[in-house]
Amino acid sequence: MSMDYMARLTSKGQITIPKAVREALELSEGDQVMFRVEGDQARLTRVPDFFELKGSVPVPPEVLGLSWGEIRELAWTLPDPDEDEEPG
Image (cartoon, rainbow, N blue to C red; front, side, top):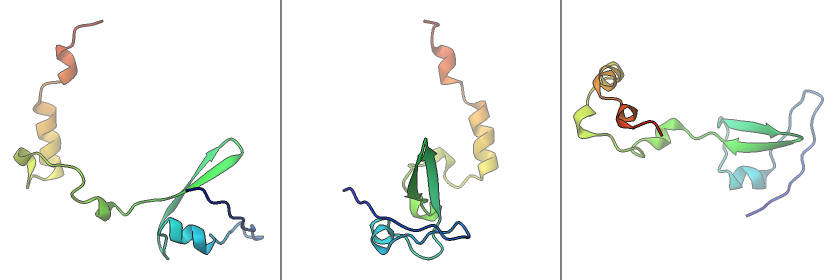
């Protein structure tokens, strides 16, 4: 879906995101957005709430219940998968 909407920049450098754009991006008050500038264009994207991502990445059973510190420690003890590769 492609949409083009205009907005006017205020003297304070602010813009109001048009309602149709807010609805399309499912934006509401307090949400964070990110601007990516490429040349003379900018892209506005919604920054996901990290709590919405819960459960989206499978967790290996051997690390369930471990703290981040314990997981990092365990990761340093695992063999480096790149060491087995022969130079090519």
